[in-house]
Image (cartoon, rainbow, N blue to C red; front, side, top):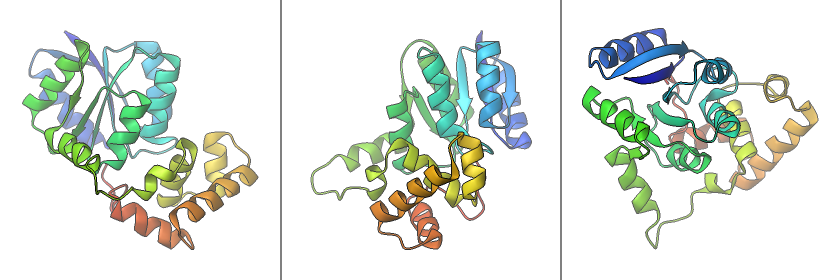
Length: 215
């Protein structure tokens, strides 16, 4: 039996996934978290075999939660399960150390396959994601402007795009508001954006957010 920590800020999504997985008799959901901070605590206390991690959540969010979990325990196996199918998120999360990437369009059979493969020491990337990543490496493809951002700049951009203020970001990341302002200016400069509206447009174009984000 593979133990799984399920992290998603939507209770209906968690309930649906729990029922689908536990009906297979191969997986046991040992805990649920609705934000990045709780996923950190539960990962440490429950020590699940695999973590299913959403990206867009309150607080530090899924990207930073993955980084911190893997910083504490590099052997932890994480599968990202999200609506995002552009290459921006997969590339960042795989670089951090996630072992799998699925979209919420996947079926239960594919989800189980991914969990089993990752639990056995392998990796799993949804075919559509793998194709996008492969195509992005072909000669002639333009550089993605998001790739110019550092890890912290990328995180600050995500939080700005989700409407968080400098004060809110500084409190979440335990950084000074002045430092956050510096990161904000760097992001604007690197992406050629004039203001936050431009940043949000870029984030939407890159598949990083939707106007009505669902996970």
